Length: 291
Image (cartoon, rainbow, N blue to C red; front, side, top):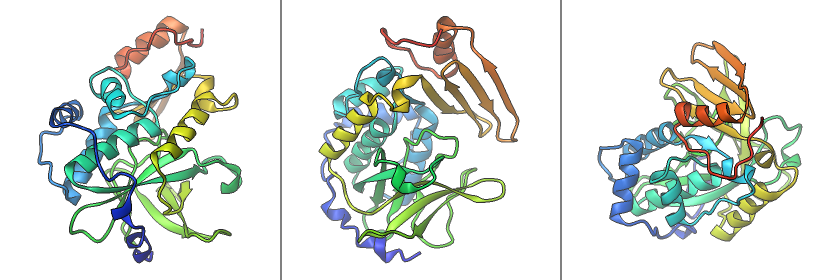
């Protein structure tokens, strides 16, 4: 991989130039994710924060299910994810993570991506995912950070932008250049399955601004065909390296050893109980759950 392409992404001119989070906000965030360590803007801190964040916050779409567009205002994200018993989806989680990183001294560029899982062609999917390109002061090599990809193959740690360096932490990812008809280089995040590399999403290095994601967030939360509106989807990591997934009334526990246990929940009351007990989130009032 030609990492100079990532170096030319003008991270210094990122739309994430300032953070509105206070010191108290940072303290509350670090306590919520269980990060008692250092807060220096370096690769080690980025890796530790990323790993802790994805283990602390579940992915969930309960606001769109109940007809509410999630707020991306930092104060609202602090109230919902950090000080409340909730998770969120990509726009919420990566917006919050970027605010934290900028407050600590990292340089961040927001990227918009097309999720290609299950798609015949990348062009068939809109730009409805958010990821982050992050650079630490003094480190010429940016890394791809993404704490809000609600799929079993989501990265647990930042993904290096150097060739032959797939990320680890129990899951392997890499970035590869893919063919494109456009003027910008197109990159793919790939996840290593048992026997192959599987593309997760594609993106260019074009920076996107806050209003771009406000529009995408509104579209994903309100479009009649959006999968985020149709049924609850809640996902969290479990201690053995696997994951727990609630998809409608279907509850799936997948262990790191490949063992999968699946069952159908009996109705709304059990869905609410499982959300509280297994995912650690309180289902907001007005959420219509499958009965």
